[in-house]
Image 1 (cartoon, one colour):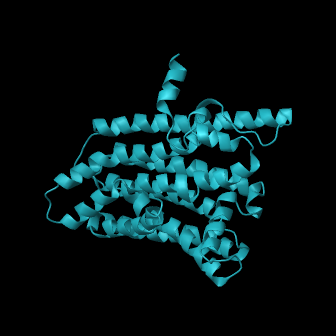
Image 2 (cartoon, helix red, strand yellow):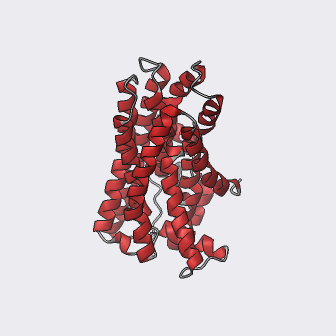
Image 3 (cartoon, helix red, strand yellow):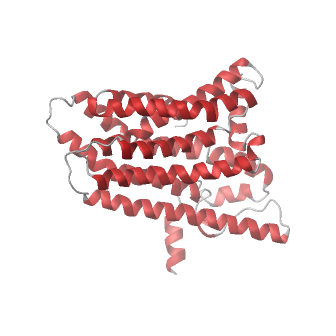
Length: 324
């Protein structure tokens, strides 16, 4: 299954761009977004990575690109689109991107960008196994390509929810599924935030007691090894749920100006943000790279891996724990 992951991550952004370019209502949004994302990524990620040899700068560029998507969703929406829908989707992009961008900027101020982040050290390890070594022109090109693909993801597949929301001029009010998606988003974010707070509390307690190399098994971390990643993935699933009625409305549209190709491509792309984020949060820069170093630093981690699922929580265990 993992052999499919890089293929999907490389193909999905291009399919997303093709979907947006196949209709006059979304092609303008795609064109503007392409310019905006390029203008963001070159000074904040491409050039700094070229000058320093570190890929970690993309952690600033990518969430800033989400913020830009939120702004464009607000400004480029059709005049006939429901403002509740466009403002909702805009707000979700702004919040998700804004909090991650702020975190990355704070890390930069604190000096964490002075060395490569572990997840990108792990990428370099993968490339080394492919015969691409640090300090070579192939490594530089590979790093620039990976950064460009994150920009292209913002241009293509990750902008599909925004494009569906701003081009939906047929549904005047919010649908039940959209409202359900809002509640799902709230639950997912609460789960992610609670997981982060539980781990932070654990780390503070360990620091006070002088404990090093301990493995967090508190709260949600006893049901999933990466509950924060699961919550973040849930946020993207919720965004898909919110814009799904807009896709259904598009498919029911009988306007001859909307091609069958556009409908097919948008249908293919609707689940792509969730799939792409799952792959990233588990395989590419998330759980697997993190666990490579956790096993080295924490003696208990190998046993923890045997006892607790990596990504999806053990819901049976969790429900019985909180209901007892």
